[in-house]
Length: 178
Image 1: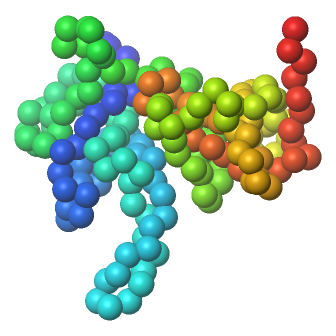
Image 2: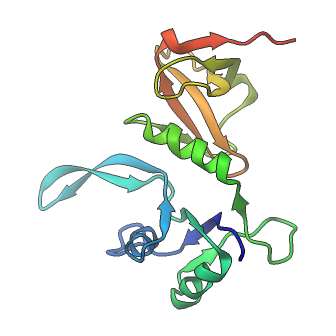
């Protein structure tokens, strides 16, 4: 029996659709993750704070290919994202890498997301290890932005998305570069 993996899918529905794919697949019992952010919108003349997907077309589904294929065929707006240069090979993210990303994003109320081209090498600061707190044991680079008083640890899924997670200074240990 094939093992389940985190497949990267795209949902081509409008961002304001009543039933986007991540809600539909969750209701069907599949494990779905979509990077979410808080946005202000106007509903009935009132400003309402609501949670919306950061990228409306990006979602991750933990399943087997055989279990996921019927949904992709049924929904015309749901597609696999394919590896560039690989013939019909869908993108898959490793379990450990995806669990690490999800745990980091869910540990804070306001993660900040970055697309691959947005972060420059100058924005990536020192290599650090987190000791204590909800992100205990994480290693990564600190985001260095001039004028920012907040320390953010960069956690990424290569070639897809990077999240900046707020970390308290007392949990940060600078690693020796040798």
